[in-house]
Image (cartoon, rainbow, N blue to C red; front, side, top):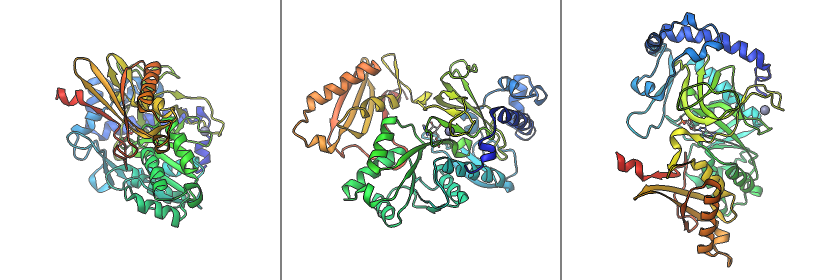
Length: 434
Ligand code: AMP
Ligand code: ZN
């Protein structure tokens, strides 16, 4: 562990610390961020009404649109001369959302990332090949400085240039790879094409994967093809970046670093706080963020939180598998489906390749069309019967997800590969209504 005193704190002590920090943070946000003063006034409360965690539900939420409305410099509690870093989220429409950091925020973030690496068993003797994109995206620099903080060697190769990635992986004998799970799948495929035998030529032992949802089946494929152990890391730019939560070696959920983040689960429709153990939208409060305080930030990510003590000795609560974001949920003919559930069904079937694309359209009724690549060995084998295989995939999806889908089998290599976050869904209904 990187910070055992904090990581092994009893849950009751974590709660006490959270409560103290929460009360202080509420006052700080009210005094220094005009937006929060307004929000409090609208809700008819003052910081005096917040005496501890038990009062958290009285506070108004913060949403992504609040950040957009405070473009360019965001929700800021300090003067610009105290800001040492700025990142921005991709934002597919309109302006990006900007997040800022003071020196103290950078300290906190780097330490959290160092804890994440250590939680996956990474040590200062490791060589980390960091293939997250360097730039405005928080992934690149987040994983970079966390590895440096731990004392490991970082190769700041960034994303793309796959042939060079593979060459460096072999020549430098990198022991850790950090990238999106979809890029890991692509690297494994490319390695084989380039004539490498990952288990013999490479020395990678650990993968630090995150920034997008991925299924257990994808994890298994990455682990098997690269001969590594794959760990899940969760974060988002609004909450510093990566490093909010991470799996430990038990791999039974992602520990949320709760000395820094207070998490609640709410019903996404009503905003009501849900009882422990129910799946809902994750809402985070940053407990010490200096530059950009965030109180009760609605993430749209849907998950269950587990408060049981983990076998690893950490009592920080765990996010059980993240199903996806509420705004990624597809409603097809009245049935709710997450892309991650479709991935789960497909990748469980032998012969299905690593790439797929979900296309949703509306003619008279909603239609779900899934393009699925076939594994090269299966594609070239005499047993491959395209009509029967497509039917099999359609039947499985109908049986498990209760949606009717039309499966189009694709030649291996036909679908675009992703170097960062994969685009797995094309919802043509959204374009039509704009
Ligand atoms: P960004 O702000 O661009 O880093 O995107 C953050 C979003 O990526 C989160 O709100 C999640 O929806 C998603 N995300 C990040 N890490 C994970 C993960 N490990 N599993 C599932 N989704 C993730
Ligand atoms: Zn654990």
